[in-house]
Length: 211
Length: 211
DNA sequence: GCGTTGCGAAACTTTGCCGTATCGAAAAAC
DNA sequence: GTTTTTCGATACGGCAAAGTTTCGCAACGC
Image 1 (cartoon, each protein chain N blue to C red):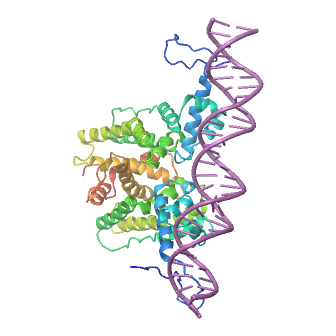
Image 2 (cartoon, chains in turn red, yellow, green, orange; image 1 turned 90 degrees about the horizontal axis):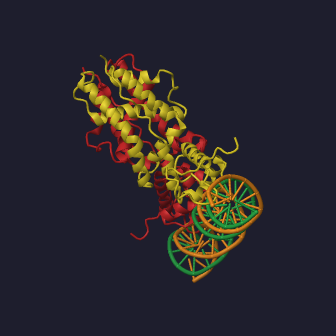
Image 3 (cartoon, helix red, strand yellow; image 1 turned 60 degrees about the horizontal axis):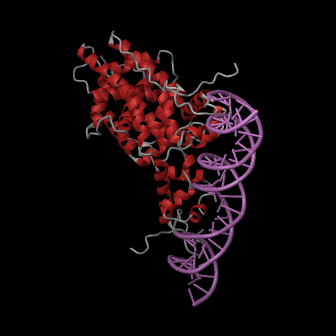
């Protein structure tokens, strides 16, 4: 393959096609990818530099500045690529749906890409308020609402206890899988076994007490 | 008080007392304190600067560099000061002891000082392996073992289910309180009510299912 | 008092990044 | 083939932050 590049023109209108060499869509993609990678590796946006992105993407800084005027614009566009594959709310037993949800969380928490979101959301509440707000809107909130709906549904069907404390229950679900994945990261904590989601689901549902 | 300073000589032997003005123990303490404060406020060691430490401590940079050759050395010494007030394992009903444990975790997670540990441990698994290892040894491990002992004890007395999955159960306990405190930090998530530890304990123990 | 060492402040030096500009080559339209 | 625009690479001045050294003064043993 000699030239996989395509015209970056998004809209169908071919009318205003400017003369000259078209912008490389491949370069653009490489920039986005590099940005996401580097965000995933760093802890805050402060230590994210355009130069590093350019180097990682194998691209000149010019190519970046020609498209985005500020670092924040670039990051916003990059995060937009991380389209959240919203967990589809299916019907079925509560346990199955919880397992599905946990498995999604586990996979995302293990993925460098999706960790970008957590890094930024965690790092600076006050530092990049605009960006954090955007992340919460796009990624955190849908997942929280999906989980809340899941739990409420379980209460309605009688599969869950009626006096469920929703905020605490949500923290139990999310916190458990997050912590498990995290602690597996720094050594101890247990292997990320195949059926992890099921083990977690069983224990979260059953609690600690004997039956 | 004109001179509260004391000779920084730790060992009793006064033999090799060097000539000249002795190093100020007060300055040293101020440096350590400032270091811990700043770590608690920042998210990673990268954004921790000697200048900021010196400014916060009201101390010249020289005074810091004279004692520690690298930033990591300083951080290691600072963390050594954070003696972990190991949760005393008492007797009594499991729920009471769990509430005590959770309350300690909640208070520590809310405290700037103790947050140092989490920040560093979370931020870079691979960045400062030496430091992370030290933190795990000094702080994380004792708490994990205390919790493990707590849970095992509950199983022995029959207060907890016999087939408890220890790693998962531990993740449930720690993850829930951590996530709750964290999410309370970025807006949503619920208030840190007074009886939070009890609410968490009840739900963790009972699980989601109806009785 | 004298020599020695520590002290804080400030100046100096280094480093890293930014944002722009320039260059030769490359890729499209005409 | 010519024109136009983009490409990656490199260089530049500027800037801010952090590390290093300098300096005058303070504290201690002798």
